[in-house]
Image (tube, rainbow, N blue to C red):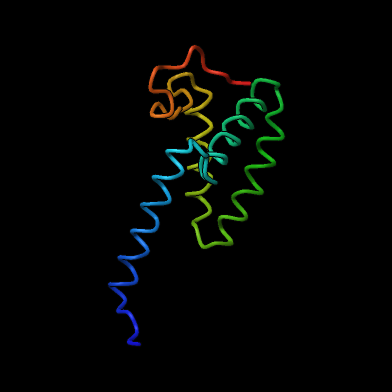
Length: 112
């Protein structure tokens, strides 16, 4: 049996990923990024609303250390984190829901 070419393996992987994403969407099942996005928003807003910015800063340092260990630029990491916190807490960028999950529109948006 001949070995598949790289292009063929990549094509099959794209097809599998496309099918997986379609199945998850049909099942309305969150993936890792959906859960992480909600958890980060919950943590940032909870820390700020409860006046626990020290927890947020301590977490920021831990997250940046881990990103730097993966090869990201430290200053860029702090900037990205701070901009995200500002977007969530500045009142000009609300949490991004996934409207395709509510074809008839939600009655309300739970934020707790």
